[in-house]
Length: 599
Image 1: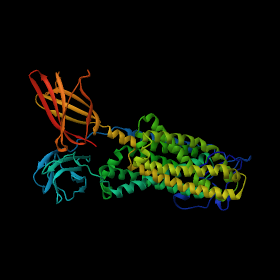
Image 2: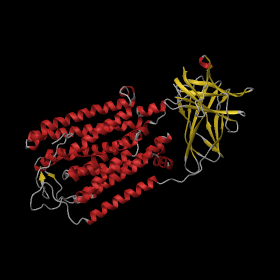
Image 3: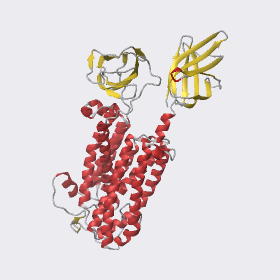
Image 4: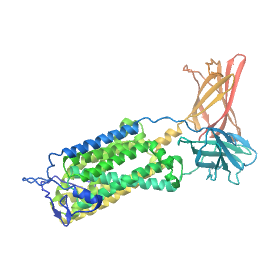
């Protein structure tokens, strides 16, 4: 026996005869005809006739050539789908911005009446937003196209300071392109260009969240129930119906989630769900592969339930379980983390373990509520099998949490960590309940104690609710980048290219935020030739913050670059940078520009 997550189980040698019942609960037996897909599923999942020598479960039907052929065809179709998804796509020309009014980095005296974006071909606007100096964003509407120029009415009351016009359009080939234009009214702001505080579309996010929960429920409860049927025992009629309903719901939610993914990627509202560009964009993301594989898993799960219980349906069920793990390992924060040789298999094992555990909850609950030898047999077998799922599930979860968090303090200092704390609290309750069931209720229930069996059935129902809450918490991670990703973003450098006739320089400041940094400088001639400079110096200043020039002499370590180490940039904002290049004893080139340093 074993920790059962709310579901201990069995290996008992009790035969399940066709038509066997327990308190009105039909177990894989002959049922009255029913209309629709449920009737088809239930009519085709009866067990084989019992052998002369009683055994715990009926032997699989022999001569299953048709079933085997269907399983092979399903696997072949899955392979074809993967090849199609991984095939390289054709390249197309896209629209390009030729001119903007106001121009990039322009300083104008008064607020304009409109903005004009001229492209090399006609375009259709997707999202147009203006970010004010204080970081607030306003969505712009009523844009009109004049030949290849997009004319956008400007909102009233624009104040002084730096603004950012953010645009995303669809080119004639159907590909979305986007960009932004920075301009200032009156005078530029002291800091870097403003960024929108939060311009996410809440209805789109809510729809994505609900779709994710539906997909999780379909994969874990639906495909998991098919796996239960394959390796534990026959499904009660109610469990088979529920599993089929959830998988059908998942088949609707999976493609819908792709369109929602496209809306989110394009920053479009929910009203744009009917636009083709939202769907092509969604399918073009890594999540498109996840949705396709999830749909394959659900189709295989439904097929397994539709077939008579035996080796063929068991093989298809296990293939559906593998497709579930593969789908969730194909995309997402956890799968993208390095080293992927560890994180992707960890996500796979985590998902398969959850599916096997969660998928057993409803069948076990119904069996225990009905009582009888079938419930005892299932309880014993599940208790024997569940450690095989729980141990890899827990180990993979710990590994992924360590990789994603980076440090313990991220648990309470980041949104991702706080969601993880909620999930951990729910998991502790779930494991605590499972432990109680395992050590206090399982043995009496297996011995036929009716009171223990009733308590165990109630416990399984509570576990199911806890699992749903865990799914809801996990779906929230779609909107909370992990601390690992935040740290990687913070470590990104700030870079600029300064080009003059006598010389040019590529300057990279790492990390590109205030504090201790290092600077790397590559100098070339104005026509991109090698430049053997005698001396290079870096000069930084921020007059708006009252900081006079900071001059540091660069050293040449021998790799062709010039470096400035142990440099401290005291405050974030827009800094004036100058690179002084001593070309000869009589010639010096001074290359000057601005660079934005993040907080």
